[in-house]
Structures are given as C-alpha cells and as structure tokens.
Image 1 (cartoon, helix red, strand yellow):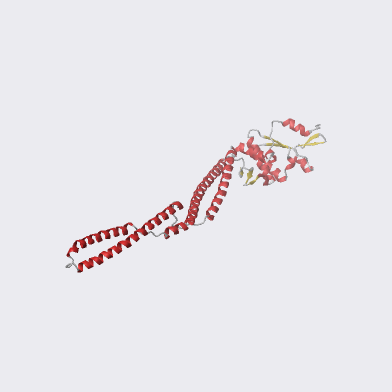
Image 2 (spheres, rainbow, N blue to C red):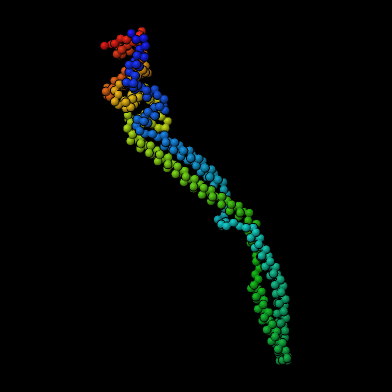
Length: 329
C-alpha cells in the first residue's frame, strides 16, 4: 500500500534517471543553453558583436541618406567658377589703381594736346622756313633747332603713348557686381565637395560594417554546419532553438517529443534510464514515436501519467489506485 505513489517513484529513482521531456517543457532560453552546451556552439559573443556592428551600420546608413539629401539640395555652380576665394578688397584695389592710372592718362592727354599743337606750329614754321631758305639763310640754325625739338618732342609723345594705356574698368566693375554670386557658388562647391567626401567616408564605413556582419554570419554558418547535432534538422539562432528552420514551439507534438528525447539521450549517453512525469502531455502519435526512439537507442523509460480509461491502464506496467499498486504482468 502506497499512500503517495508519485513520491515513491521520485524516491526510488532520484539521481538515477533523467527526464527526456525536460527539453520540451523547458523555457526557450534554457533550451538554447542546453543545445549550445551539447554541440559546443556558442554565438553569444559574436551575436553581441554583430548587433553592435548592425546598429552602427544602421546609423551610418541614416547618415548616408542625410548626406545624399544635402548633396541634392546644393545649387550647381558655373564651370568657370574661380577655384580660389575672391576678395572684394583686392577687386576694389584693382579698380582704384585703374582709375588712378586713367586720371594720370588724362593729364598726359592734355599735355599731349599741347605737344601736338607745338608740333603743328613747328611744322608750319619749318614749311615757311623751307620756302624761304634761300632768302632766310640766317634762319637755318633756328630751323635745325626746331627740327631737333620736334624729334625730341615726338619721342616724348610716343613714350607717353607707350607708358600710359587706358584701362577698361567696366570688366572690373562687372566682376564686382557678380562677386556675390561667385562667393555663393564657391560656398556651394565647397559644401558639395566636403559633403561628398563625408558621404564617401560614411559609405566606406558602412561597407566595412556590412563585411564584418557577413564574416560573422559566415563563421556562424560554418560552425552550425560543422556542429554535431543530436538530430537532423535541429539548429538554433539568437532567439532560440529551430527545427527545420522554424521555431521549436511551432513543431508538432510528435516532433517536439522526438527532439526532447534525442536531446536527453545525447546529454546522458551512459545513463540508459529515463524517467518522466509528463505522460499526459503525449498523444498517441507521440507515444508511438517515443517507443521507436527507445528501441533504436536501447534506452528504458519510466513514464507516469494519470490514466483516462481501461486502454491507458492496460498500457501501464504498474497502476496505482486508491493508494494501492497493481501490476499488469
């Protein structure tokens, strides 16, 4: 007579067996830790590294979008835009110098007019002297002096003409009037070049992060492929255990039972006895699957559950009713 049969079972087999359905009933985090320890694949460190790289790349991609928007908003500039900054002070100095030159030239023009008049007067006198040379022998010396004076004066005039050139100030004034546009275009070009450089740098950084993520994913894929899984189709990701690419909880009851038992057998290869109190969690299909696994692995299972009828009682080796145990053998 056994008043507490469940307690009796626990006392009889304490520390001598393991629950093959523990993996199925465990929490997702516990499952992935069990599987990670079993196959020797731990991605926690690289997953954390990948998350940092992924988040950083996401930020870089947002920055790329912002910089591309800045590039699109910058107005275009003329192709002949000066590459160096244009100084309004230098242009004003250039204009002042041109005006001073022209003022001096005006003075020389007036002097030139006087010289031209003097040359004309000399020409008239030479002409008069030439016609009267025979008669004015005493004027020969004066005539020669006038010729010398004329020659010297012509040289002086030519020098004035060569040394003083009229500068066209309209072009300088035009550049001054257009200086604001030039400065704006130069600023646009500078902003565009700087933005382009920053965009290029950010793109390179994002590409490097993508390469880092690809390397991490590749290393994880290699580790997953080379790991010794207790069951074909079993794998895991950062969220939990997968079976045939789907979350463990989405597998059928029979599949979850198969996985859980395989995990228990793999983690306890030398202990051939399994004990479970979760018999009522298994349907007919799961029980049949469980029976096949036990026979293939040469394991023994003690499974406790509350019977639901005569068929259940016939399946059991021992049945406790009203505190008394009966065997079916």
